[in-house]
Amino acid sequence: MPTHDVPAPAPLAVPIRHSEDLGKLVRQLRAEQGLLQTDLAGLAGTGNRFIVDLERGKPTLQLQKVLDVLDLMGLEVIVRRKGGNHHGE
Image (cartoon, rainbow, N blue to C red; front, side, top):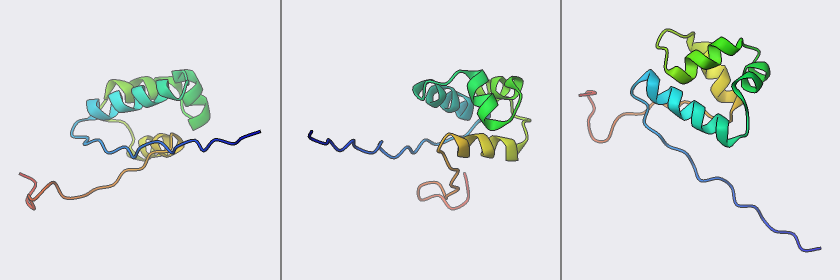
């Protein structure tokens, strides 16, 4: 029986400048992983409302909970300077 190497997914690098950007990304990747909001909430140990709010881009969510959900989804947050601009303008 021949074995086929499954290529690794391409690295994901998406600039996030607003909470809504992160929400859209989480919603898209959750759907790609075949998970319902309730599935993700159960896996993350949060309430379903938290996942709904995260995907809607609610800006006042607890940062650590957001980071925990991203980690669970196989994502990480990396902070780096923008292009050649060192002052964030």
